[in-house]
Amino acid sequence: MQPAIHRLLELGPVRSEIADDEIWWLKWVAALDDLVAPVTDDEAIALASLFRDFEDRSTYFTLVHAIETAPGWPIAEILDLTGTDWIGVLKVRWENYEKKTR
Image (cartoon, rainbow, N blue to C red; front, side):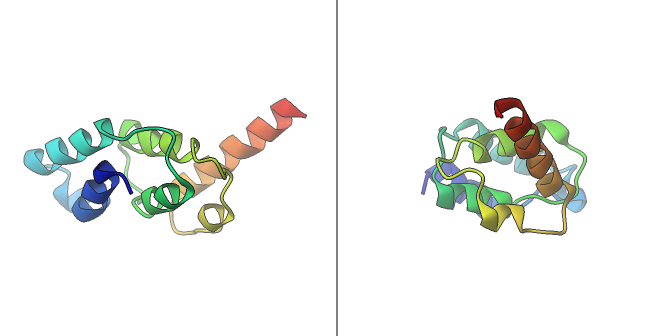
């Protein structure tokens, strides 16, 4: 697994209680910047575990784009997750892609 993903997993998901912690954000964004696409299917699953309902769209869209580079995308294990609107974003994006390619 990429070192950047290990760092993201160690830092954990974006949460409102740490949203004002500038040092935490700098580490999280640096790890995001170090992600190398395409990610593996296992890396995509790990990245999906970081989703929470937090309003920082630019941060989470970086995760969405990385997940979509996995060779096995769409990954059922990710699309079956619940508890966050971001999984819904991935589902809608996949449905739209399928419609365009038919």
